Image (tube, rainbow, N blue to C red; front, side, top):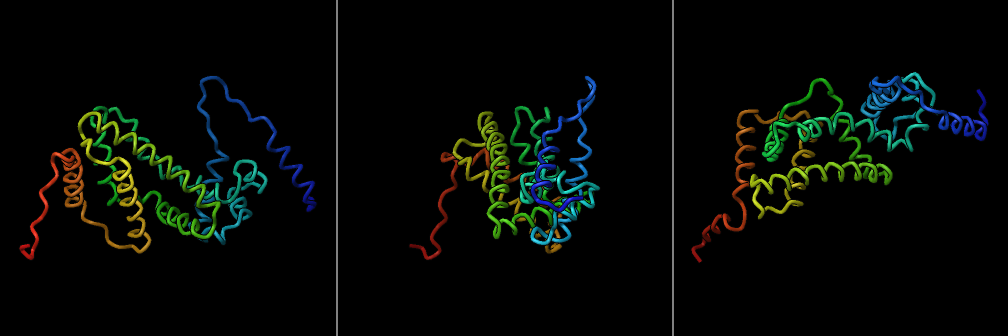
Amino acid sequence: MTDDPLTLRIIVIIIQRMPEPTLPPGEPEVDALGDRLLAAAAEVFAERGYDKAGVAEIARRAGVTTGAIYGRFTNKADLLVEAIDPHANDELEALFADHHFQGRMEDILLTAGTHLVKRDTDVPAQSSLLLEAFVAARRHPEVAEVLRNRVIERQDRLTAIVEAAKADGGISEGIDTDSLVAFCHALAFGFLLFDATDLPLPTPGPWEQLITHLVLALAESGPDHAPPPSADPRGT
């Protein structure tokens, strides 16, 4: 294998421009190589952190060359966030598409909120990987940019859920959508610290009861339903 940078770059360009193999009509598209790359990247990032994770090690575990990685991903930051995506958005996407929630979009917030206290044993590295991305974003602008774009995409989905619930009366028009979306994100991201420090999660029953009360309150908390101000304890 040549070590000449120009020759290597030419090889990479040739690989990038090779036509993708086509599938017979009706066959589902399967990206086995992409799945291997993302699985290997998730392992390496979770084990070593963003700074110490090497593209060469990711390629070795995936059984490919580094050229295969750069042919699919812009940089290491893009690879990090793409490795998180398969787990981070699956649940929200599934809930958003579920016909069970048509007409009661506020139930999505209820379901997603109650799931916060259920650790997913099938993907134990998911939380640590997302937390690593946030830590890396403080030091690396490219990570911050890619991660910010992903968060904005999720904000757009949550905004659509809230607006649909408002239209159906499940959430009061008096609730500020941006504030509610920010609250949902802050709550979800805060639970990353529970996983990072292995803190015990709230008991599911009482937690679900709390989330239920919060969601129900969202339907009543407009300006016309605002609670009266509390009395001044000094009696003034």
